[in-house]
Length: 355
Image 1 (tube, helix red, strand yellow):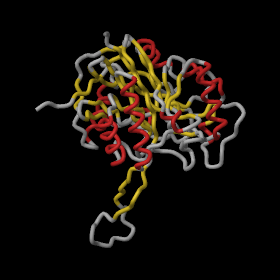
Image 2 (cartoon, rainbow, N blue to C red; image 1 turned 30 degrees about the vertical axis):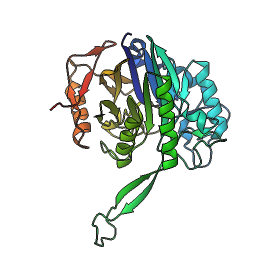
Image 3 (cartoon, helix red, strand yellow; image 1 turned 90 degrees about the vertical axis):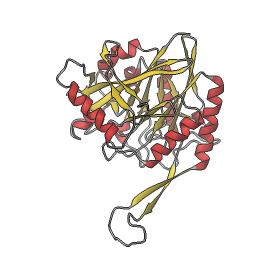
Image 4 (tube, rainbow, N blue to C red; image 1 turned 180 degrees about the horizontal axis):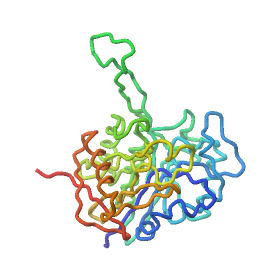
């Protein structure tokens, strides 16, 4: 059985005059990969308005679906999937089907939302499941109602000084996992393990307000997903890069940032980190993950993410951002540059230290 290469990107919202430009900078990677994935964080509709409490920029016309051509699977498990209600979700799924893109993480019922998307390449069966920890109240799918696949938690706020009183000081946050959500997700992962050789989990999670940090909820869920049988975990939502860890041999990309995000102030007015992103490249085989890494990218003034190469002046800056993603949250995986090239683009590998 041959090795299969998976390519994954983070958040995507496309609303531009020429949608074909949105992923044009990484088109060589899309073309070279066997399996391609992204998180489509919008609603494709021409008829339905934004719901109360929804985010209007997430709604874009169905013509923008052209930008997603070349992606095999996209996640719809995120905090904007229901911004035009269930009719908007239905329009999105129809638009995706029109260009051959398969959605994960949302559906007419919770069972639909958690049903894995199966992709077979080179004799290898890959299952993709998508879940979200970040969502509007009521957006979760139920036994008989449409929505997204949730992996929620309830937050408790504790004093940073146990036994003392410090009014106004920022509290510690303790996130308590929703056990009902977790049991449904764990069951879905188990079923996917029976149907596929490898299980890829997409997770929309984390704190998008601070650079590099990882929440306790992200860390806990990553560990639980690996214990349940995930072969690879792909995180997003932060709109800034996050680090990579290896948990019991399973790579966890905590945050892939956004690859194309056509919304006010993204990325131009929010600072340089919002222009930093990357493309995950993972080699799969029947034995598991062979190697994995990231193609560093920089979003240019035309709002197109373009790979940064080893010979370019921006390479060292790109590596510094990746190093910070490992250092700040204290992740153990190390950056290793062995000269890997994929789709004509330079890839930085990650490896767990031995010994």
